[in-house]
Length: 156
Image (cartoon, rainbow, N blue to C red; front, side):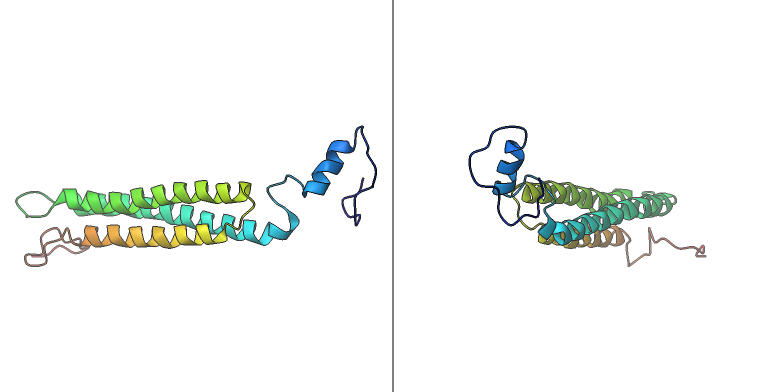
């Protein structure tokens, strides 16, 4: 049986090809119908970009927290908890948004709806959360005294 014929054969049929014919009449059962390939590809690319953003944020967050809290204690007046909190907001928030985006995109695929906008919205929200975490991380330094400031050169 070819899937490109203009109409299904008429008349009642039973046998090995009847289920295929019924699926053809219904429009198939695949998650990737031919007309939706661009939607699926753009969705997967946006989800991959969000996952890459989360991994990059994790690596940068770990390095930044370790370097920022190395010389941080109560005597210098910096807050190691705020450094960790900012990194946790950025990485954790991006991860949670990514998981929710994947679940909603797959749900849209199952219902045969477009899903690229779900992945795009999730990517934008992940950028917002990473930025928010970066702001919290940056505010952990005390601008009045310079305590907790991350620098490459020692200040004397």
